[in-house]
Length: 340
Image (cartoon, rainbow, N blue to C red; front, side, top):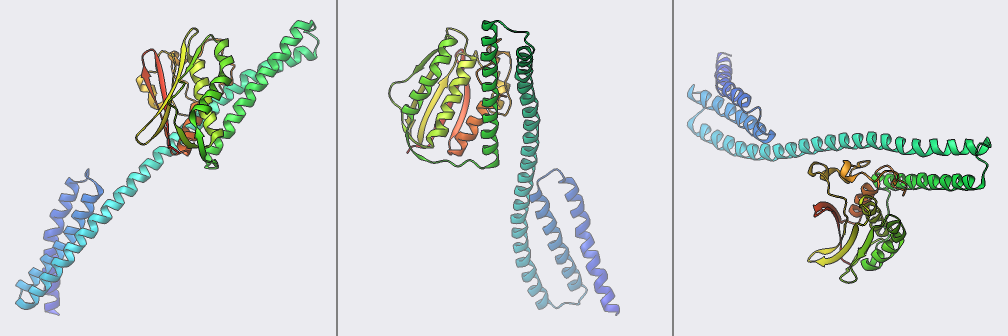
């Protein structure tokens, strides 16, 4: 029993000799990565075992031959333990970073949802108030002359179309966010899609005295869903026309480089502040005064600031990328898509 107590005391003393400095080292390294902490912890454990074995050997409880065997075993086990600890530490660090990123994404998503509710509430409240006022005026007979009644009917239709467009945008965005979007990929000539979108947007551009210019050649053939690709181009054109002042120009160009096809819509909006560029594609973001539509002209189905968010979702669903940059006097939205 006396020998057992002696061995316990020697082993405990050896472990404390290693553990106390190890705890101090861990405290000094408390701001370092998880990998370093795990590696130091494994090293402390291995060294504590080694110190106990050497102490017991010096107390003549282990022969020289047995000591050599133990040292070899501890060395190999320590090397494997350090390697395993380093690998596990990297896994833990990666998981921790992923968890932090997931929490940050959740916070951004929640902020986007709050912004979306605020914007949609505002965008619905205004046309609904107008519709109610006009309907009550017609119902109560306050408006009776033919011209005014016709004008009220026209405005009711315009506001109803605007709300229908907003609901369509909300539905599309919900499909994208829920992962319920299913693309019917095919070989699509990008030039044809752009030509159709420009033709559809021409009346709106003409009403705002904005000139639309599209390149006549150089368009690539891409792998895409034609309906969703048409919506991408239409949203970008509508956004560009909406923010370009009268007598301005919206230009659509495209081409092909080494790894894909691209097209770009350049407007004359006056530019976006650098701090706002990363947020342009966020839900419900509308930006500063330089990007504010002209008074009285926000009735083209612009919705709750969802157009560019939908563009990003649809482009990413195609395994493409969309980016925005400031150019002379305006902004350039560039979409990159896989080549067919």
